[in-house]
Amino acid sequence: MKSIDSSLSVQTPEGIEFVLYPAGFLVRACAYAIDTAVEWLIFGVLLVFWIYTRGIVGAWISLLVVFAVNWFYHVVCELAFHGQSAGKRLMGIRVVRGDGSPVTPGASFIRNLLRFADTFMFLNLIALLCISFSRGFRRIGDWAGDTLVVYTEGRGVFRLSSIMTRIAQVEVVDPPRPLSWEERQAILMFARRYPLLGPARADEIAGDYVSALKGGQSAAEGPSGNTGASAYLLGIARKLSGEAP
Image (cartoon, rainbow, N blue to C red; front, side, top):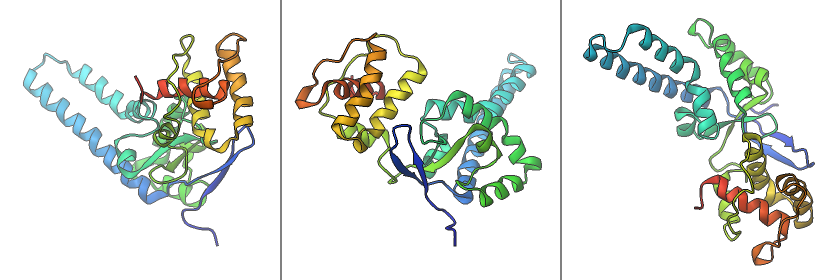
C-alpha cells in the first residue's frame, strides 16, 4: 500500500540518486494558512495607513499594492528565501524544482499564477484532490511549473547550511566575473551534491564549471590538499552562500 507521505527518488544529471520527502496536504495547508494571515496583516497595515493619511495615498495605489501582495507575495518569498515563504519556513518545507534544484523565477511564477485554479471558490478542493492522488503531492501549479514542495528540516543532506559547515575548511573565493542567476544556482547545487561525489568525480564535474567561469583557464590547487577545481568551486559557493565575508 502506498504511504500517505512517501519519499521520492530523484536522479541528478550526473547520475546521482538522492531522496526527496514531498510534503502532504495537511502541512501545506497549515503553511498556506500562515501565509494568508501574513497577507491579511499586510492588508490591515495598509488599511490603517490609508485611513490615517486621509487621501495622501490614493485608493488606486492601495489597490495596486493589494494586487501585488495577493499575486506576488509567494513568488518574491520563494525566490528571495530559498523556496520558502513565512508559512513554509515555520512548517519546515520549501519549494524546489522537480529534480531537486532551487526553484527558478519562471517556475515560481507559473506555480503561483495557477494558484487560483487550485483554490477555486476558496474551497481548496481541487488542490486537495491533486495533492492526494498525485505522486510527489503536486497541485496543478506544481505540475505546470515542474516543482515540488518538500521537507527541509532534518531531511537529507542537501540543506545548504549543513553543506557549508562540512566544507568550512575550504578558502573563500571571489567569482572571477559577475555571475548570472543561473550560474549562481548551478554552483550552489554543486556544493549540495558534493558530499555524494568522490574526489575524482567532483573534480571532473567542477572542471567544466571552472573552465566556463575562467574562460578556459584551470583552477589553482586548493587548500588543505583539496583538488583544484572542486576547491575553487566550493570556495565560490561559500562566498555566494553569504556564510563567509
